[in-house]
Length: 88
Image (cartoon, rainbow, N blue to C red; front, side, top):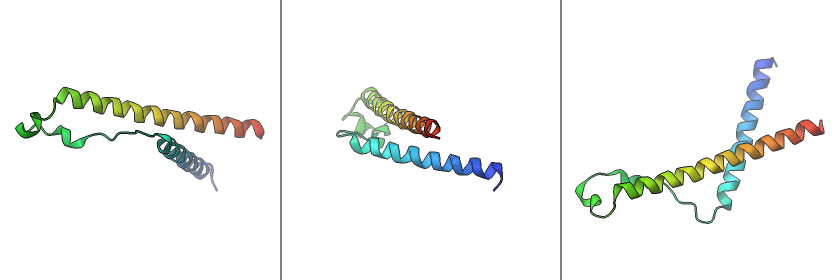
């Protein structure tokens, strides 16, 4: 196997591990909200029910939570990787 294929394989393994860590972190969340895609409608019917500034702010907070989870998964993966290097 050439060096390029080895690097690709390591990358794929790492991405899979990060994905699994992220899923595990998501499962640990008790009240994880989803982005409200229906709130993006600007028709008069929906506008009466909700203030667009409020749903934009809510969706921003939700995205920040997901970003924090993703960063945590990447950090945990890096820690696992450094442990592997130290044990070699």
